[in-house]
Image 1: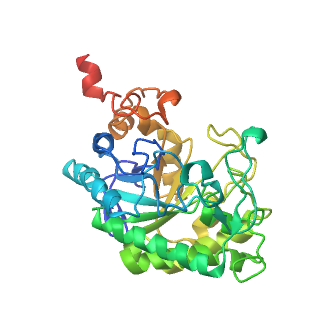
Image 2: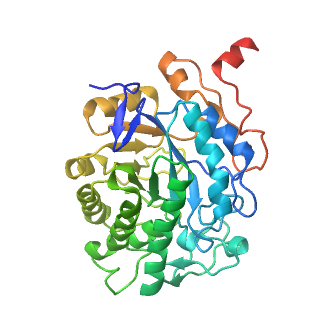
Image 3: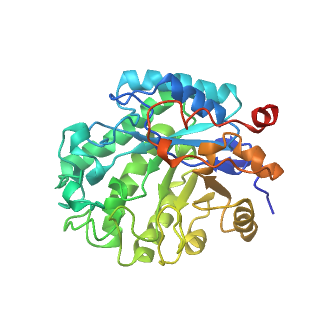
Length: 359
């Protein structure tokens, strides 16, 4: 059985180990969603991951309503990503861009636009009186085609910027997920109703990305079990198994699943994980994510349910996470108060093991 520290081919990308860095929104771009020099150092520090999946990156102004998150729809944004990818490559790492359309979760106070979704719905919020999400309008067929082309154009920009590939963000209640799930997709046309129709948008987005990047540099992230940001499904197996089978047939490089558990630290659910059943219909590399330790990660590799594991928050406080897991060194606790701040604190100032030892 492979270990976490063995290399793996993820399509055309050869990862030096099976510890992937999961996408982490960190809000260090400019107000115009342009990557900054601070981001160059942040990603350089974490280049020992087998593969870095970038923070969620907007494909259009319509699709990005989150302050200081980066984009990939303008030439300025594309140029500003180049030093980031160069830094990762110079440090011996690989990095792909996660392509993000927030759908109904794009905040109007950020992009000044009414959100677009599968149907007319409004995302919930902890304090209903201060809900920053607007009521979404249902995308027309022309707007669906436009969004698909925006994914393709963002892929072109990602490749120009030097990324090794791309990942479609199809999880966590964002636009692709809004089409997949029956409590956010109330359509009665060819994009709604049956599971076959609800996976159509996902398939067309992935096919458009493949046409630009190639299947061996295209991946997707899904969150098949439980509710996330108000998006839920009455029968997730009925939609996510056909979705996984369709992705297998498209020949993507890998599928990443963010799966919650009953005691999840970032969302929890009692809905069973679907990865064992998805494993039976998806023959390509399968990457699992959320609340893993070294031991539980290796257990899922040994069982064959996973080929690699994506770690998220552990990479925030531990830029050299791979070495810490390899040696059993203690992990540095990250500070949640600086997850979404704008400066270097809690971003590029977590020391690696050597620096800690010297101190």
